[in-house]
Length: 201
Image 1 (cartoon, rainbow, N blue to C red):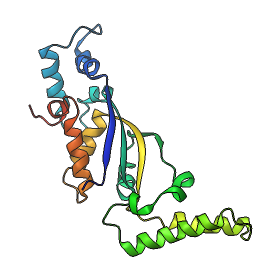
Image 2: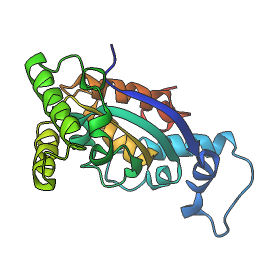
Image 3: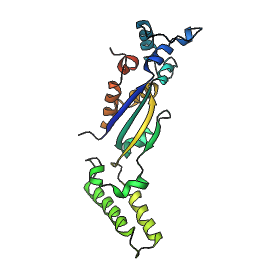
Image 4: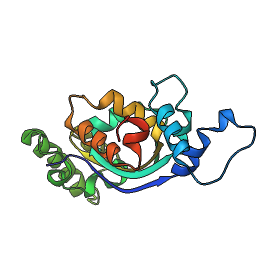
């Protein structure tokens, strides 16, 4: 069973970026149709080592997608500078609406899961109860948020580009977390990603 879901994927600028890979050798920008020569040049440049700069054109291939993943993966993904959150689910607004058993990965310990759910339930019972002060309700909410398991899955809409995905792929393809293996497999499914980034036909 997968711990992540990726959907609503859209890729923009593929042909434009492939054509632009030849701009350093042109005096005038060429916006004609992509030729086999253009594609072969882009493959050669896209498959150069990370950090050499020859793969800069990959930043023009924009990828937008929705990702649902556990918090322990989000912490690692947020280290990448060129992956931006368009918007995400909010624990502040939605935490008390979730059933944690449906929102956490199956590896989450039952004791932790049950205790976190108890804290959410305690807050939900108190939030409209006049027998609790505002400060007491705030404290119950803070305890629930602070006790959220790392296996809790959060959803977000993201935007990035092939160059950043190239870095992520190369750094995470052999990672200990299976979620990264699934993410890298998804990268391989993107249009021309294998050819332009992984030197595969």
